Length: 300
Image (cartoon, rainbow, N blue to C red):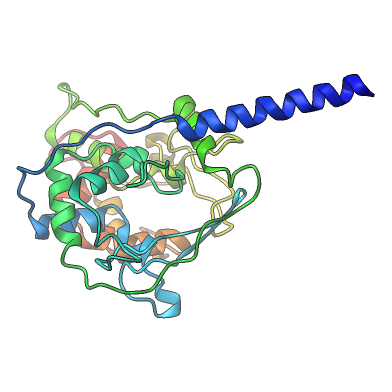
C-alpha cells in the first residue's frame, strides 16, 4: 500500500509539473503592423467572407451585431462566441492592432493564452498584413456594446486551456498558402478563399478524437456538427456527381438556391445569408472554379 501511495504521489507531482510547464510555455510570434494603413470597406468585405457576422451575432435573441454570445455546442462542451465590438471592457476596444493580429492569425490572446480552435484561426493565418490592417480598420467602426458574452463551458480535461499548447504543437499549421503557378488567377483566388477566410474545411472536413481536422479527408464532409447535423462532401468528384457546375455553384452561394430548386438550410443557410451573399461575382465564381477544379474562363 505504501508503494502504491508513493506512486500516486509521484504521478501527482509529475502531473503538477507538467501543468506548470504548459502554463509557462510561451506561444506566438512578434507582430509589427504600425505602418500599414487599413481600408475599412475592404476589411468589412473580408469580415463577411470570414463569417464574423454569423458567428458573433446572436440574431436569434436579438443580439447586437458582433456582440457575441452565439452558442456552439460540441462533443467537448459548449463554446460561446466573444464580443467583438469596440467596448473596452467586454469587447476588443482596448486591444492594439498587434494584439488583434496575434489573435486572428496565431490564435493567441492579448494575455498570451491560446484560443480554442472553435475560433478558426488556423484558416485565418492565411491573411496578409494588409488584410489584417483592413480588418482592424473595419472593426474600429463597430459600435461598442457593453455586454459580456458567456464564458466557455467545457468538460474536463478540455477546460484546461494550457493543454491547447500541446494540441497546437501536434496539429497547428499556419504556413503560407503559396499560389500555384500552373493554375489561373481565379483558381488561386478561390483556393485562398476556401482554404483561408471562408474556412470551408472547418465544417466540411472530418475531425479526429482531439478535434483536429483530418487533412487526408479534406472537404469530404463531416458528421457531428454543432447544430447536430452533418455536412456533405464538396470535393470535385462529389460535386460533379451531383450535377454542380461553376455557374450553378456560384449562383447557389449567392442565393442559397440549389439547381433542383431547394434551398440551403441550417448553418449553410446562415453562411449564405450573412457571408457569401455579399461576395462579388468574381469571388463566387473563383470559389466554384477551385472546388470543381476548373480553370478555363468559359467553364460552365
